[in-house]
Amino acid sequence: MNRSWQSGTRGRSADSRPIPPADPRPATLLTANGALGPRADGPIVGLGAFALFFLFFTSFGRLTDFVLLQFHLPFVISLICLTAALVSRNFLAAFKSPVGIALTAFSLWIVFDIPFSVWRGGSFHLVSDGWSKSFALFIVTAALLPSPRYCARAIKVLAYAFLTTSVLGFVYGQTREGRFGLSQGLYMGSNELATAMAQGCIFWWFMIHNPARPLPRRVLSVLPVIPLVAILVRTASRAGLIVLVIILMITFFRYSIEGRIALAVVVMVGVACGLVLTPGTIRQRFSTIFGGAENTAASPNEAVASTAQRGFLLKRSIVLTFEHPLFGVGPGQFVVAENGLSQQEGVSGQWLGTHNTYTQISSECGIPALLFFLASLYYCFRELRVAEKIHRSIPDMHSAEYITVAYTLRLALISYVVFFCFEHIGYDPFYPALAGIIVAFSRASRAMISQQQVQFSPAAGMGPSVQLAR
Image 1 (cartoon, rainbow, N blue to C red):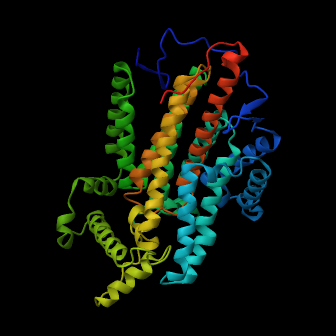
Image 2: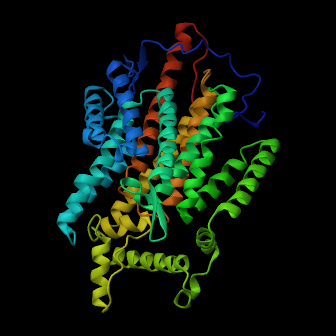
Image 3: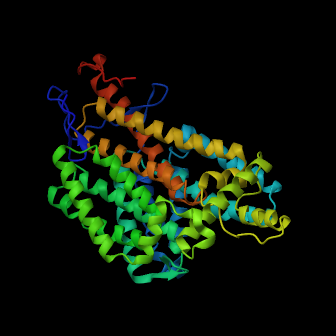
């Protein structure tokens, strides 16, 4: 079989089964127990999906941090999405998936942690006003994307949302204490802004390689990557640069020889422009990725000192993890507990986060919470693998696009696995939203198998049934 990478997906063999007419969906689908049930994409879910796209744009584009603040649009749209999810039959889909079970267990555990927190009021506020919103976003996302087509649209919306954030960076960006971020809102922190820009690059990769889009639009989709990378570089986030390099390395081997040469040329031109246009302080900060933290005491370099500080905070989070292995020091209370630990040693605390999501969760919520979180990551990868296998196994005119969707979601998930090593974003909405899309995509892909079994079952006299290879 030809395994070349063309238009964002691997080639299909010449002797593959005939493709059925465009979108021949029956009025019913097989449910999990084999019974026929109504289609999931009714008018309520359709309206909810539209509201969800708007919620994605406002939550991650952050335009409402600067305009129309008085209307509280994210809150209003969230209520619409929750109502649509409750009315639809898909509300419990998030809780039935392995990813949802793991995240639900994680959510319950951090609630149990609150009475054991070093500052119960702070932990209660974080859970009720922080993680609860992120978990609700996961639920409505899993419930309101009824088909792979809707999942592809969600990726497109997120691509435009992060592009909007990059434009806001040029208008409302400012440098504080040597780090670049937006003047207010979710992206005030440089690492959070870098996370958004890296995700934007991945989702615009989908726009470039989506075979369902016309070629001219795919070519023009290269242009939005420029402001995304420009803002990412301005954040001086070493985690963002590492993620970008890893994603480039992964995608490099998916291209043909000609594609690899073209990508290498683009990267070399981009690096050359970056060396010329990037300020020396940012270049110096990036250089510490390759070492230099040994001489922190003698070095005036802020970036080197930051590297040593990250190492110190990582050790502190590990110490607190083993001192409080079951319930941790309380959700969001690492800075308080670290200060208390430092005062016992006769020095002041750092009052900074762990800069590592994994040890953030283990130190603040306990090792069981970390295991639940890691389980959700594992099941996300597994669900994507199953969904991709489905779309490679069934005859459908949209298979190439859906395989590209699965690959894009995997790239985004890998980027978070890496980001989690350098940032403490365990309660932020980035990962729950992605996990919700993955759950919805997997569920919808499995429903397509049932659909194909109805259309092509031997009993119906329409040819052999389609089975997913194990």
